[in-house]
Amino acid sequence: MNGQTMMLPIRVRTMTAKNVKINVPYITGGTTSAAQEAMNKAIAAATQELMKEQGYPSKDIQEMDGTFEIKTNERGVLSLSLLNYAFAGGAHGNTLQKSLTFDADTGRSYTLGQLFKSGSNYIARLDAIIEAQIKARQLPLLVDYPGITPDQDFYVADKSLVIYFPLYEIVPYAWGFPYFPISVFEIQDIIDESGPLGVLMY
Image 1 (tube, rainbow, N blue to C red):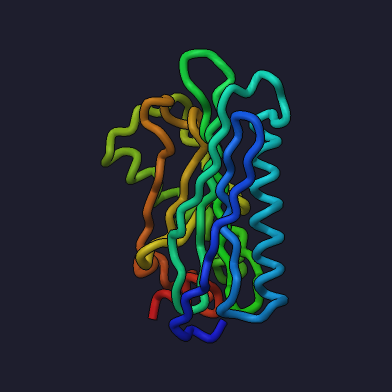
Image 2 (cartoon, one colour):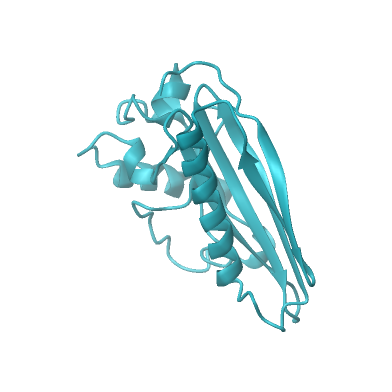
């Protein structure tokens, strides 16, 4: 990861079927063809996984809409969220979200645990910050806060690590996805400086 300011050109591929429209980000340049291929494969696999989790293909699906949001696209870091909304009757549909964070130079994707120095006890540190945010924001938890895992959902945006949980998992549906932004400067002593958070910190 070279830290240079590099914006990847990202195009959109749209998959359509009956009642289904999925917009998929597709990287077309700005890095090596091998890195592009690795990132595009990971994005395609995550898109398919979301569709499968929503029950696709199924005649019960009345509507499915796939969108994405680019969270960071600079300095050799690409972080994005894929969202999939499906409606199969009932009071409301369901939205799933999967985020991917890449080293754009190599195409490597990162899990949460890979953002930190080994042995740094990052889980306890992040849990304490999240629990303080839950208290400060007075979030109405459905269950006791379960804590995060090494493959917890996250994305990177605006010099922050943003950790989130699925709909329904810890707060009522009406509250949407609970997001917990954590400034990289609050956790800089445990960040792996060669990873995405390290690059964005400086």
